[in-house]
Length: 217
Image (cartoon, rainbow, N blue to C red; front, side, top):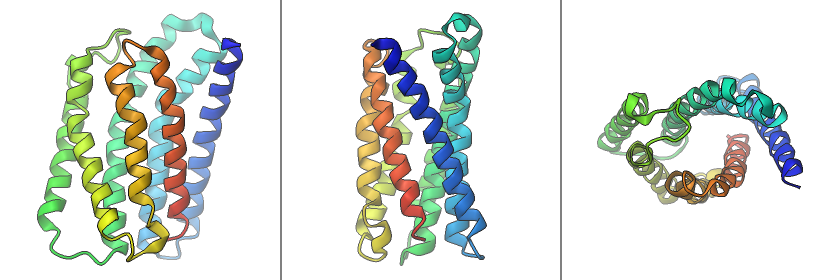
């Protein structure tokens, strides 16, 4: 039963990456000089590209469990890369909002967004994260996510305030909050309760929802 579920997880991860990649290509190919659609396509491809560094080694680990030790490096490094590209995804999401929504006097908030992105990336690059070790430092796992959570809340609040200005993205703020609702328990408890990590599956579904909303741009 457990083996079957892990195989199902591998199939899910493969489909997730494929769908994200396809949506990204569709957005760029059909952009017709639509800047918001181009940025959305780049965001989708950034998401797929970054997540592939973690999910592909995970798929290999699931399908070929006998190479556990050799795959540990790629799982750890992939998790680090995914953390960085996910941060860039939210920066691109902010850009999309500033392009399509009737924004005004957001210079300070934009600077704050850039600062949070920079702080998050620097924290992800710190060796104290011990990305390549099986038992990582949970305190660093929390600290590096503080600016990320603040970033997510800012972007979600932004889309909430302007939810009626561009109805096609009216549920974007909900998708963002739901994704963090699934993500934060993993950050806090996955080290002690590995099964909590399965919340990353519904989290991935919320990102597909976000990408599908991009198609309306």
